[in-house]
Length: 120
Image (cartoon, rainbow, N blue to C red; front, top):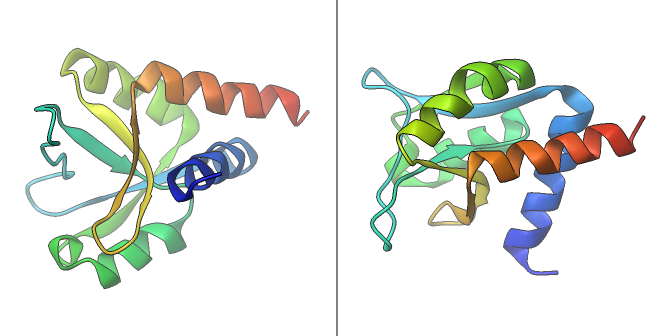
């Protein structure tokens, strides 16, 4: 399993277990960098420590602060807007360039929902 795949697997398990996820923001809002394919991706992490590590180690993210969301907030409030605006969800980005899988929100919801149902 590659680095991005293992980060994605950890995301689904962590969020399914805790019922929370994290992003980051500044005065202008949440980042949604432009990807090489012309689409934007908004980052989400499964734990506070993961987002804090990116803020601490990736210069482009040093201006941001962590923002906690409940899973229900993500599903009901954030996902519809991301989908409407055609913005992907970047999950558990890591490394010096804050990279990882960028997925359609429906795929993120399906994968976390699957983890939630299989862990009960």
